[in-house]
Length: 278
Image 1: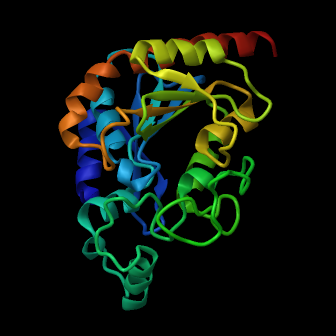
Image 2: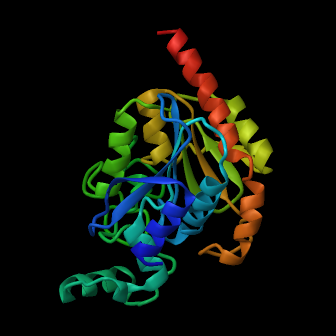
Image 3: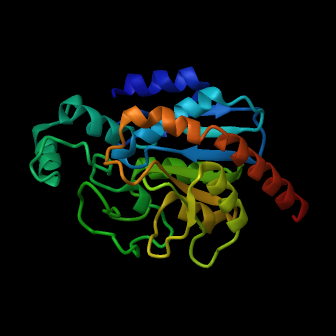
């Protein structure tokens, strides 16, 4: 999975802009669907490197979306990590010291297929400034997973999402991960939008769930900053290993066939209600 593959797949799925650049300077494509107007849906995948199946899924769903409600889809928020997990360390022109550092963080192995972080060893889904560093599994040293970073938003990839959220043009945010067939909702004391989470879960055949011991994620930051509905969707059966098998992509596409339309419905309803009360 070279960066050219990521870009070309995004371009095939719809109108592409670039949300920013990754730690190693790779572009982060964003597919813009529907008619541009406020109250859009922000959808992000491949937050974790080994979960690159979500990037494939989101590009396929984007290519099939026929609605006019605006959706901004970032299939690969962590392109460096996805490339590392699929192509290995030789895909990067690294200085010897950096190459040795990454190998050390990976226990000396050249197999990075289970790597979750970016190339600094920061887990992007614990780097957001929402209960940063308070998650049950958080660690404070770089590695393949769970490292919170040296401070909130230390990574360019999470700063991309922060800028998008701060733009004020979104009504709903959804982060795609794998695996477990669950829909996470709520953060901290904000337990609103349970009904919406249950609707999504029913459509997908997943279970709605809360994760009180988790913090620092994209969903968490979105809910904290906006109070609007945000969800984490864990795609695929838990019985499959990481990385999730590419052979299951067609099944995931069928399961999520109506998801973008439902996100649009939720966003339109929430946006209208929000505008009418301000």
